[in-house]
Image (cartoon, rainbow, N blue to C red; front, side):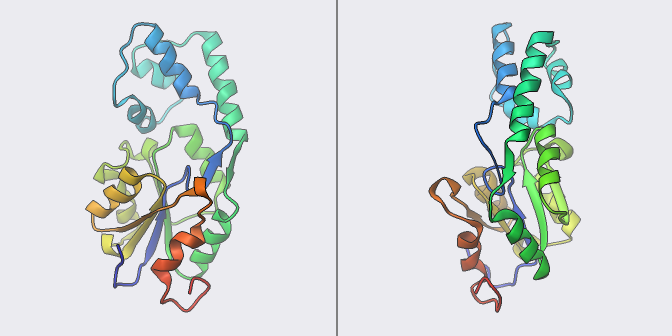
Length: 209
């Protein structure tokens, strides 16, 4: 979807868009597997619940009504440390963010993420104008509340915003329902941010033209 008005802001999903985790050990999946072994029936919104709670493993487990055994907690912390150490920005992410900022665009990230992943990701990326982390907002994409969070911070109207992400429902369908332009990025097939952004800014007289 193209927009005849000039964009004022570009919003990015984080994981799979700006940042990747090599061989993720998925510690929260370990916890959910253990909970299932205790007799708890998995719920469709379990993953969303984990990403909307601001807390550590014990806090999240207690929300579900359980106390984690010491051995499992140690295993999860080891898996988490692995993921944080193997988290890095895609080669084009930081240069693109810096260039867009120089060109005068407001920049934000909007991500469904558990607390430690969001904190580490924010350390890896340059300072931006707004942040809509699910664990801070208390809602996950595609709930309109999380999109409205960064719109309010940026003081932008939806039609002034371009959203980039790697998930159809969360990063395209959700933003478009509010009136934003949105585009998928396919990192798995080698697509980069330049590929995605160029069509939207082809009339601009700068490096994207």
